[in-house]
Image (cartoon, rainbow, N blue to C red; front, side, top):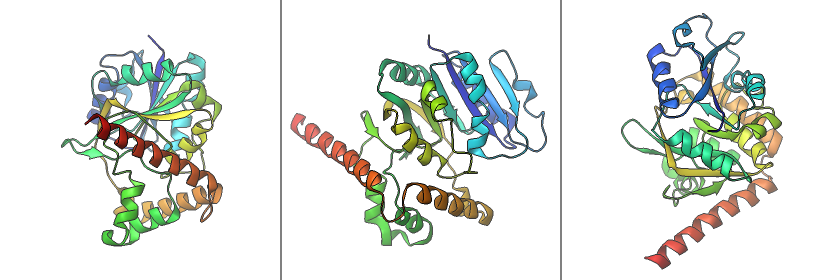
Length: 279
């Protein structure tokens, strides 16, 4: 078996939620788990510590990306093949860890894999997207849905049926399976992001090392929430992250984004043509 590690950043999460998440990760594969505790009061998760679960106390609430980066040194020390970035409200279906680990290790050009993400009610979360433009993010947050519906359908790749593998450039940070060497080479997440868009940023940087692939054979259940729609403080963080991201990669002009997005749309169109011919 490949050495697989996982990091989960915690902030005042319920103990039973984390216990369920860890149990699902380790249900049929020996995953070494790092619990990064961003909570102000430490010790709440001590009961979960074991030979395969290590608790790392962060110096306060340092954010999502910086939290996951605290696992960089242990990952390097273990010499793992695959590293999983996992949200605390995730439950992994049986066989999915092995499917992702095997795919990453079995394809030299693949540096990052994302699973199918479902809600507890069985609804599909559209985890594969185009790389965003400022309009995509602004319209989704502030405009009536009818005003941006066409652009949003394209951005969310609604023509993709999630029934086959697809090379993409933007996967949801709720669950990411990295080639460990790549995760270490890019030094994890950009620590300037507290939360939001750090997953888009790391996807773009990982793509310079190889391919990003959606893998439908793997699936997880995720209690997805939109915190910035309910909290003014989190909305400010979302805006701050957007400024960081677009200042880095480009606002109105981003030639690489346009090229990569067109390539993804072309692959989806080609899949539809192949499916129609078989039918």
